[in-house]
Length: 155
Image (cartoon, rainbow, N blue to C red; front, side, top):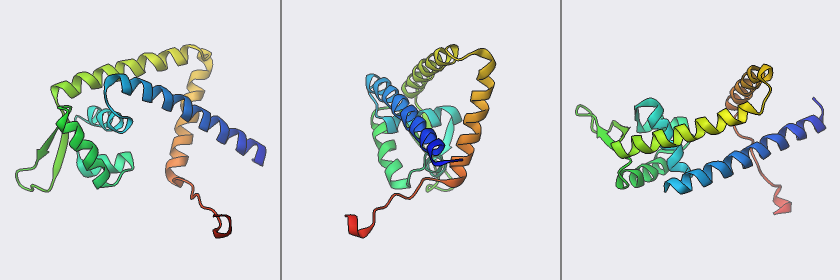
């Protein structure tokens, strides 16, 4: 792949990230939660119950950062912390009734949004889009984030 193609892919991915990020920020802002809380809420909602360690790993966050997010969600009544009776250090997170209602609202909003997006794509190309996104996300997951640094002389 030549440099121009690489730049085009990178630009398209950044544009998609900005578009979706703006959508996520505006949708979660009207729901009264932060983007980080939304990501955690959606992951917990998908799993039903998840350990704090597993949640941190799946969101790519360290435990202390996630703990602060979960603390604010517990205070807001969105999630519940459940300590294991045999090992109090093992904590799982589940949605409260309020959290489940919010999860269902956000989930249906995004399902409707992406259904509308897919309606704009020719039907015979939709499978191709899904396959391409799957391959792309798997490749990015394997490789990880790029290291971004500047030479000492340019700082």
